[in-house]
Image (cartoon, rainbow, N blue to C red; front, top):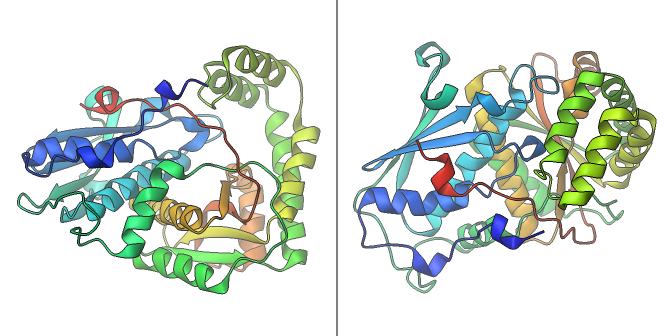
Length: 346
């Protein structure tokens, strides 16, 4: 695909001496590189002085696959985490305030919902030279991983994930109030793979699901070229590919040395944003260490199977919010397009 459809910012161009609003818009260049469900990119931002308002663009919700907006808000949380990682890299102090559900207006600009506000320190900013930045070695590595991160759809190798990395991912999740279940036992992964097969078969049996997936494939949002996108769109819309997809995806699950499930005590907009933050930090951590990640949401999109997963993991009252594979794999060069910052400012 044309790399022009995924512009990547030049860190050396950070406007350290500019006003807070200019710095904020620069940081958003990294926010928009976040992953999102079906590459829907359901985020908008409002910038005024030292304040960045984060919106969930509900017009981009996948109403069939994601009727309650869980994946939409997780995606916005990923963008929020990229914003915060970039701010730390450039020495810009900031605070995050989530908008409580009761205080959230029903709609904002362009049917978007205000979900969080990031306030930047007007004075803090440093030169981009690594020698002079206050960011720690890990913070710098996470920042570099923003542009390098890819969703890897390949089978993973059986090589074990270092315990030290798993501990970091778990600690990062806990730091934003999110739980993490790490499934490394082959027998339990087999059971999750069986749920994956059923999820794919159930979803592809629904013509409305196939039509929705076809729309996103057809416009090239998932990174395919024009011809491949059109062929894929026709195949998805008119062929029941559930058995094939189920077989393929179940093998992907069992190939991974780790299946990770992020959980929340309560299923709220804020908890979903926090899960998105935790997932993106896990993805950046993995990328910086040469590992691959692959979110797989199908099980969680089928209520019955989501309940079975919860029982399998012994979650009790906690809610499974996001599932992903973690491990080593050959690189996946697919680069999905991104909307430029100018298109997501309100």
